[in-house]
Length: 382
Ligand code: BJ8
Image 1 (cartoon, rainbow, N blue to C red):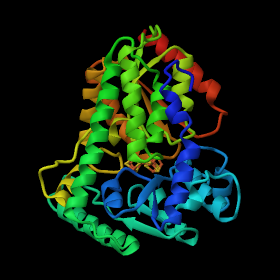
Image 2: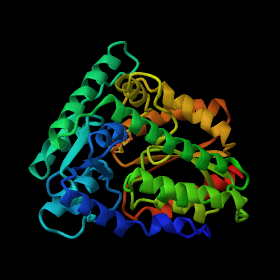
Image 3: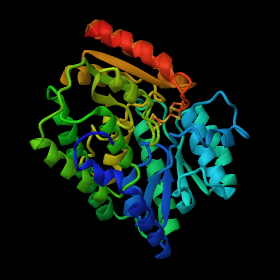
């Protein structure tokens, strides 16, 4: 990480420790769950006494392995994640060391590419699929999702032998809310002009949210926030940019790196590796199952329809963070985010906020071309 903030080293140096921790947990019979999406509630996994790591791939090197089985024209996140699992089960060394540490993948029924990939995944790793209503605003959606969450709770109990009690769930809800509060503090500081941290560094921190244990992650963010309170920010004078769109899984920092190289100042990310993961809290005063179902159905993912909540959130964030322009990021072949761009663009246009659409994969063949477009965009909005 390139910033002068010392606390970023906590995240940078966390890999070995976490892998050792997961190995030790498994030696003591603790189950490790792999997930690939925000819709799978961590609270239920932790309440069942298991641990979790996120398996979303952000690197290009496992894609050729995946393309031996999957079509080439699907999103790189799906191919990279699948390739990592296949490579690990064939004894390869391309994948992250955490894939062989996973006992079960808990997958979710979101986009078509993921759903179909999850039908092949059991050839390599035990897989449980959590179903999701596709129209979260419909009257039946909440009850259906609630029954799916309870079923998932039973599955976890069978796996770990630990009852998912209401008390344990409430404890985990409080823990997850604490993380969310911290992240609000962290992101709140980025409203300053200039912000005290680079967007590419924030992304690398947020990627670790899906790898570290909640305690480790919070400790790092707390120290980082404390340091940011006192640090004199580097002079950053370029246009203030929001990135909105597909998640950027660990290993993928291409577009933020380019924006910053060209002089843009990234102040907020509307994505699952940004605000979508922590913006909304789970109600601590309700029945914990209902509270979880309500909160998770509110995640504004483009796989849902209609997805007005996301459009409103983007406009709201653009105002709160005083952005000069939005870089709309789509992973190649992600139709949901790609098509939803039109509605986002229209809503931003009403607010006179310009948008640059970038569709890309994990390779570097388009780096120069993206750089030229970002350059022109920043010049236009400066
Ligand atoms: S809640 S964004 S983590 S589904 S980018 S694989 S949608 S084709 S990752 Fe996602 Fe959950 Fe939604 Fe977030 Fe498909 Fe699109 Fe690829 Fe995606």
